[in-house]
Length: 310
Image (tube, rainbow, N blue to C red):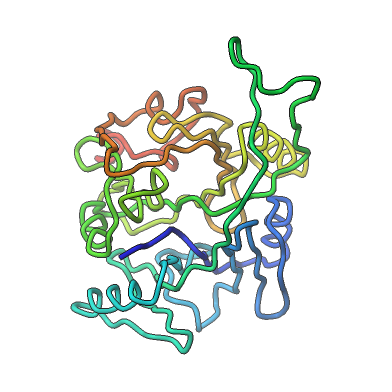
């Protein structure tokens, strides 16, 4: 089953105007809006959809208030959809829509779907960096970004009561564990053997209900992470954590609190894994969360044993 990654995310929101303003400042392109909600896209065509949280056509919510209501995963071809439908129909109802896409729920109760991917191939200009012994940019200033324009959806993150059960569910359709936190505190899952370091990260929050944490968007480089973050700050949006650089996936980041029910993250230069990737176990703590930034709280990393006992 060749799952590429997140193709679309639908949010149930409580304030459409505020959510639309945030996504505009975030750098997504608005395709349509109205009483139904709004649709935005990244440069590669991956989508963010806004709908009223009371909309009865949305899948059931995993938590109260604004939050993610559905995640659509993109696949390469129809035969992948057929295999997924066959596998998941063994223990749950799977609906096949007119466009042959699939809809069901995963084991945390999240609405999920699968479709032939609508991602477009991108061909950005090569990046140029100067360092001693390797000069690539001469008589030309480096690029400075007044704001960010996300290229693609990178990954999505949830806190769950039992990350092991979620890993087992997604393993049935081809997801692979890239790295882990010790003691089953969290697992980074990529959608196929070859691809982004993680398309889905789930962290164990004990016996509590599932909770949406954040969704991440790829930008070109660290300069665009900074330019995008500065633009958000200038327009009054609050930083959640960052900027910084992750130890585990190597990605540069900046997270912002959003009116969508969780955070949004700019990320750049994430690791790409294949069958040769050497999986590792990591201790939980701020020093493994980020190389530069240490202001991450429990909302952005797997909780410690002490916090789980509270």
